[in-house]
Image 1: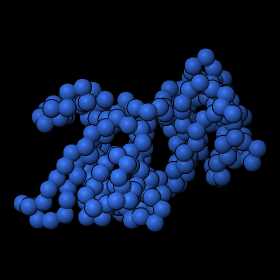
Image 2: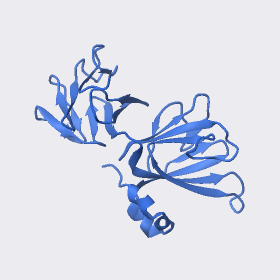
Image 3: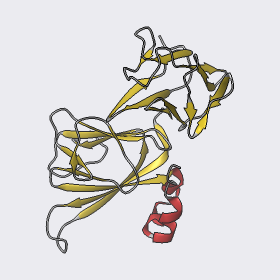
Image 4: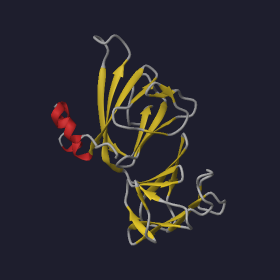
Length: 230
């Protein structure tokens, strides 16, 4: 049973894997011990490393013991500290991103799709959306690709710095020319390859959809691009 009013997720990066966890409890313990709500089996994570709490519409993180917790590049020194959506926690070698759920994101994804063929002949299309869940391929909306009647991947778009691609089971998806087998984070200008299509991804402010024609102008497009994470 869900105990909090917020629609929020943790994206947990452990080595080359990314796991998604929906926050449903008012307090969420994180560590390597089996008793934790979020158990992370990594040697750099303490048995009871930290605690995430939700109080009056805000999230807070607290250290459990002496193991360090970083919020971005800063070490958590106080008893507890508020964290906001898109903040990055680091415990040991593990990265944890707090992300906001819901139907719409504050980041607009612009997909530029190039079809196979000679450069002077091939078609291309543009698709822009703020949805948090986008199907790639198939017939159920999302990013429709001619001839691909089955979904080949899903894109997750949960706000600033929380964009991920998840290949469908048994489907071949490349990210920047490398085949991926699980959830991977997307960055601005990344290229997905599925079937005979190359898809360049741009991460833009949600303001892009208030005036879509502005994206036709390079200078306006540059102003809309989400800044790189420091």
